[in-house]
Length: 85
Image 1 (cartoon, rainbow, N blue to C red):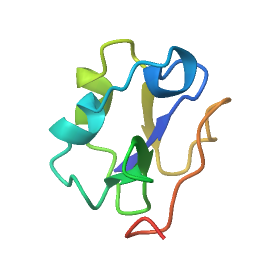
Image 2 (tube, one colour; image 1 turned 120 degrees about the vertical axis):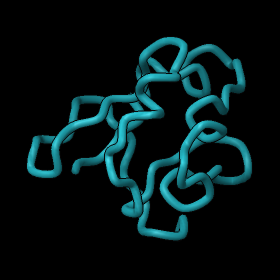
Image 3 (cartoon, rainbow, N blue to C red; image 1 turned 45 degrees about the horizontal axis):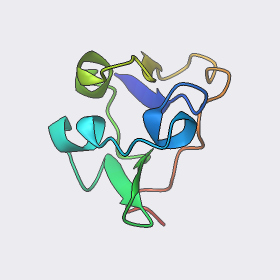
Image 4 (cartoon, rainbow, N blue to C red; image 1 turned 90 degrees about the vertical axis):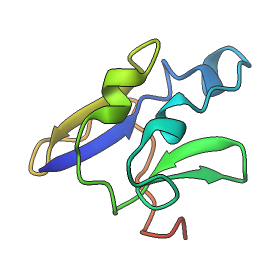
């Protein structure tokens, strides 16, 4: 389907010192498609299918879901290998 990206310039975890795990909490593949890097900050992995739930629930729209072959959005955090490695 696609892939989600967290936009570093919008995400509360990177911009305002507010810890937010809404995308992580609501992901149907939590712990696989979205992991908590260092136990604190959400990170998208290669297991993401691009379902769009994280984009829909993000309170400030700091997550963008794009088709698999689309360019990576500007300010997107890198995608981690499956399993958070």
